[in-house]
Image (cartoon, rainbow, N blue to C red):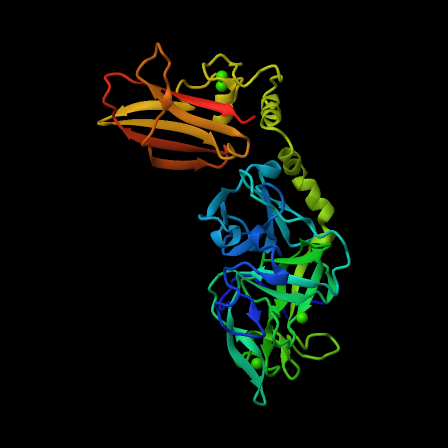
Length: 439
Ligand SMILES: [Ca+2]
Ligand SMILES: [Ca+2]
Ligand SMILES: [Ca+2]
Ligand SMILES: [Ca+2]
């Protein structure tokens, strides 16, 4: 079924979405779709490696399995979020029994979990009526390269440069195919469609998303897997006449690749539907139940109060809900809520200065804190305070702090922060860390 199709990995020489209408590399680049396509899933995208992932729960994103692992960050870029700064999320390597991800069996889908809360996440398209529907597609693949001609007529374009910048385009879902190794795939093709946003995926678009509108809401319907992209003007192997490209009219060309037996090239025919380059995307609706089972805990947590989530946490250590945030279950002088913030064990005595310490440096005071990476998501609020009058307890927030060091331990889900202030003028100062749970 997928003869002549190639994975959308960034193998050289590879290109982003390719548009029928324009070869302008700035077209639909790093800007949200508008008009009829406003809100069509762009704001759920983030960068994973050199590719895209889609946020599908308060802390899960989905991408293509064949992209591999190894990256520790998922970045919600400003042109996706619309806020002033990129937001970096760290992947939780301990999930799924230490695997660090979940594969959806029999598909190219892979889910990761991050520490913290995404600002929004995509609903899943769960109906099986995708064929015939309009789709907005997004990816970070190649740009449109030089024209491919036959008898002087343009028939498509070679893959251009790989700038790894996010773009969006539009297409229609034509059909569903079933791949024996990678399951059900949504198929789009590259039509000669002037005056539209018609596009075709290329190398580097893997992991990008396809959205379909369902009763007024855009939902995640597919994740880019592969394309028809390898063409030749003849069926002779090794003569260097082949090219990778997006073809809106491939009749007269061959599709396939140079094999050792030199039997890899097949003439393009209308009958096998290879006359227009196709893209193949893993069908979300076929895996929606498995995906839902993985993300359900995160969805449940979203509806809990900070105190309910605190109770879930302290129960993990075998302590009952009678052990309130302000109590100190292990009598190590750190209240439970401080151990919660620091990601420590509230039932085991910790080193005296592990959650928070104060050091005197030449001319400086240094504060070292240990904070869980999802502290804000869990409704934790903290502040370093100081006073020169321990009797009056007149604590105020320490001001003028400079962040001098920030390191993460992803296995523990915490980061260590060091701040410095200039040494104050008073002859004595007392410092404390105030930790509260949001109501
Ligand atoms: Ca099409
Ligand atoms: Ca050839
Ligand atoms: Ca304690
Ligand atoms: Ca402890």
